[in-house]
Each structure stands twice: as C-alpha cells, then as structure tokens.
Length: 225
Image 1 (spheres, rainbow, N blue to C red):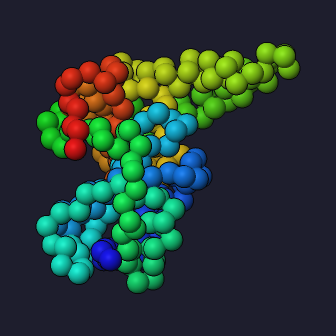
Image 2 (cartoon, one colour; image 1 turned 90 degrees about the vertical axis):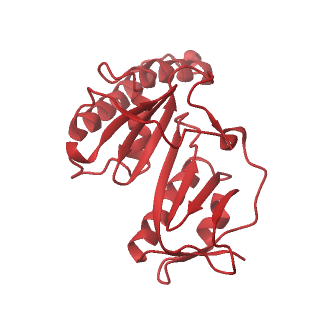
C-alpha cells in the first residue's frame, strides 16, 4: 500500500477539511490524485458548482514502499479521508476506482497567463453573499406549484452564471472557492489571482484553486491524461 507522508499536521488537517467539504456535496465523490516530488494535487468536482477544484498538499517525502517517481490515479474521496491520520500526518492511497468523466479532462499544467480585473477577496465574498440572498428571495417568491426542480435550476443558472466584472469568471466559481474553504477571511488581494490558459480560467488562492472552462469542451487548453 502506498503511504503519503504529509509535511505536518496542519497540511493533514487542511486536506481532511477539503475532503469533508467535497463529501458534503457528494457522498460518493471521487478525487484524482497527482503527485511528483513533494507536492500532491487533489482534484475534485462538487456537482453543485460545475467547476474543478484543486487542493495542493505539501509532502514531507515522496512515497513509501518503493513508489518514488509519480502518482496519478482516481480514488474514493471517502476512503482517502478514512485513511488520513492527522496526528501522524500520513495518508494511505486507496485502491483506484473507475473515474467519472471529468477526471480524464484536467486543466493544463502550464501556459497560465494573469488576467486583470479580479476584485479584492472581500468584494468577492460580498458578491457571493448577495447572490445567495437573491437566490433565496426569488425561490421564496415562487408559487408552490411553480417551485419545481427545473425552475430552481433555471434561477440558479441565471444567478451563478453571471460574470465577475469583466473577467468572464462566473460567480459559481467564487461560490465554490468560498464553500470549499479557499476564500477565507483574512485572504488579501495579493494572495489571490485570476489566470487563463486556452479555454480555461483559474481562480487561485493560497488554499486552493478553482478552474472552469469558458467555452464548452473546445480544443484549446484541454489536458487529457
């Protein structure tokens, strides 16, 4: 069994919190793990947000039991969380599972360029709060016979697909960043950034990133691995 040695207890606790949040939105969530050297990237896709989220974890040393080059596989998020020992700062890699379609199409590793116009983190958090209030208000105004899943989804798409200023970043990406613990209070403007590569946009914070494709699948910026 492959054992990952995380840098410290804080890294282990942050990884556990991230996995727990993913499982809150999808009890059967899978995550794709990619590691090389002393960095582990954990990819997930909470279904409520329609974005990819990435948490990078520092490792104290690459691997145990002879695996010393790279790690790349899709596993159960629940099993990975169960294997995590926060005090020992270790995690065993569960057996691979058949990954969902998104796990085969990841954002590119390189070619990211800074994009201008991203508001400060406090403005982003205010935007999300206002969107949540609007969603609740509009759904509560619906007559009982109109409060269908299709109508709720329509309202949600209208609100969460709006773009942040002139950035082309949808509000749902910022909502995902806040809900997954990436956009924490105290995060400054210098700590966040917006980047693009091909058809992808990526919101980066010190605690993780959210990636979203701007125009369907497309042919640019797609990395199938």
